[in-house]
Amino acid sequence: MYLKFFGLREQPFGVTPDPRFLYLSAAHREALASLYYGIESGRGFLGLIAKPGMGKTTILFHLLEKFRSTARTAFVFQTQCNSREFMRFLLAELGYEGDGDFVRMHEEFNKRLLQEARAGNRFIVVVDEAQNLEPSVLETVRLLSDFETPRAKLMTIILAGQPELAGKLASPGLAQLRQRVSIVNRLEPLAPAELSNYIGYRLKVAGYEGEPLFAADAMAEIARFTEGIPRNINNFCFNALSLACAMRQKVVGLDVVREVIADLDITQHAIDLQSDAPAIEAPAALKPAIPPRNLDALSPADAKAYMQQVVLKLKNWEQSLGTAAAPVQGGKAPD
Image (cartoon, rainbow, N blue to C red; front, side, top):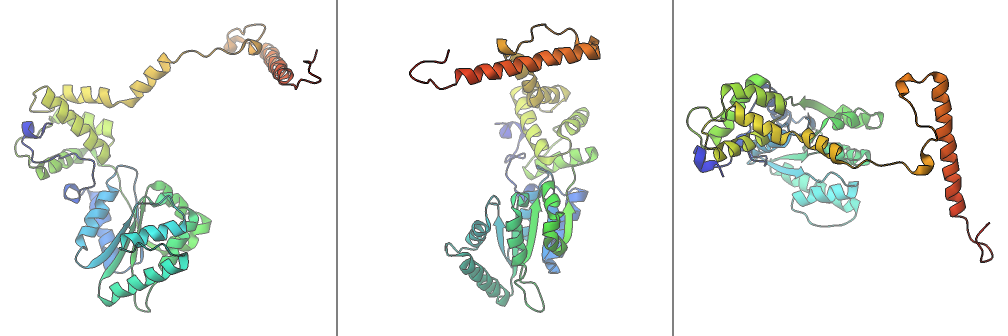
């Protein structure tokens, strides 16, 4: 492990959504502020759209941390479910482990909403990976917003998911839900100019003090390969620091970055697999009687004649299969 080698207290490029390591780019800062305002103003439904690896879940954890002392929260991850299972997951987040019928679960949920409202607490429900929800379950989520008083909503629901979620909300069958989503935010990749600040921030939170660990000429290569996606950056930096430590280099230079790129470029493995794959020969019955010449040099008439041969061979092959599979009658095979 490279922590001691680089003077770090903890892993700066972990895979868990730790709110302490949230770097607020311009897009992330705007999304966080908008969600915070939406909760404070009781807007009901909010949306957060982001491609995988953009830090969506980390932002949500950071947001809920701000309301930890003044709100009751439920964070639902299990989104590949039906309506009844969704309600059960939601109630489990609120400490209710009962497994009654759907009406009973609705009643229990309403009771808990009223209890929190009387106590003066906000109620926040976060549904992560909401693009996986079936339309019927999204309709169930919409009906949850009917729990309200004449003066205020009893809870805020945040639907967070990948771009497929936006496609579902745009469908005609979910028009009523779409109309209730009053604020929608989208996270964008980090700009190349932000990469150095992002890496430096995470290293600082992890306890690093000193000169930059990544050489300036290496940053452009990292930005290009990771496409500014935080999860990609974290994975890349973990591998780069590990390799630099193994090579006893205190600074991650261009040589280390290029080595990591070669190791992480999955397309190289795909090319190797393709080149190593054994050739599959067509059955003899399917081979044309006359091998084709260069197809680019064939005239239309030659091409048509060749395809007719292929079709004839296919028909003969299918007929041979049918004959071989014909049932034996009278204890004798057909002549």
